[in-house]
Image 1: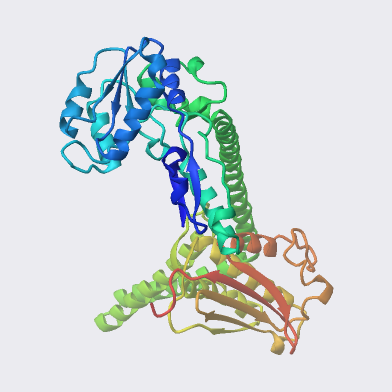
Image 2 (image 1 turned 180 degrees about the vertical axis):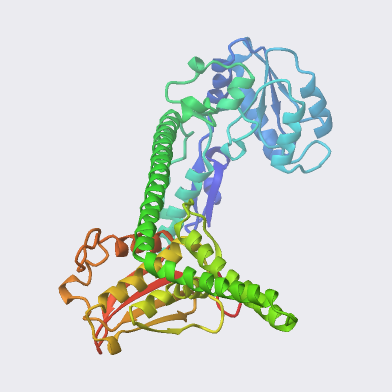
Length: 494
């Protein structure tokens, strides 16, 4: 059997057998009370809070004997002959410059047993004087501190003895020196409460639960956090400034692109002047012929009203046709900022092909179209996307200028995928030199005599501004194909 947590004075050596050993402690009562007087030199009364069991009466006797040297310096009161509640009342009325020495009351004079931590909390709630103890099991809230026995040290020593016994040693041969008080430790909060200066503590004292000001306790962390925040603020400000410059540059670039695209549209319109004039002259000539016929009919008698109505219908139709040509031309030539809207890519392609149909007839080019049956909703600027398709179609026609008339064929198709739409414009021309296929979209690159080399470059700029892609490849059967891919606004069928 291993006896532990017992003062060596309470060990009966004669009763021990060869199967017994002791891990005892040595309690020095004068040291405990001298600690109180060191911290509080003006103390006039020390109340000892203790029970009245035989073991506690033994310790009262020991304290009375060992504290005789202090009888002229301080008055020591014992509350062992009072019920617990009466002892609390006495403590609450202690005179100034008093202190309390706590030792867990095991059994009070009435025979009542009191649980240690609860009893200490009740004492602390009424006490008007600092509380001291020798047992660090109670240290952490109510106790000021001082020299104390250590529960953890006692448990460790006991465990070592038990392990030695389990390894085969005989208990009687294991001699453990009595455990002394550990280094004195004090609760900073209690020192502050009772106004005890740290200069009065023993040199080797440990102060725990110290509550430093935030800056004092975490000055390096706070300085580091402030430095990081300052650095982040500088970086954020720099990023915001860079973002502002980038947005300004994007706006400027978009304006320049719009202006360049506008110039390109005027240049294209200049190339289409004869075709546009032909498209307008046709309905105007028809209107004039119908008007002359109507004038002759009005001079004749009787007037054929049905024929006159038919002529009026023809005039209205030709007028609408001329107006449509003019509207298309105005749409092509108008100067407007980049205005993205939800549009149908099929309609953009169809309108552009209708506008260029007369040019195809003039150049004797056969245009074939293939469009998806459903709409292709994309987010973009209608005028700029029309210009892209127009540039690509005109380039395809230009590529077939020197081809025999019967072979001048091109195909314009639209395809729908899961999340994007694709437009392909193919021609039957000589194709693109394989070593130049990645350069055709660069500014000022051209294979046409007198060309500026800006059409495909502008097309790429516009497509990329719409988050799209554009590329070229050669067809196995001859000719080249330009592809445009733009993201759909919504998935097809949803």
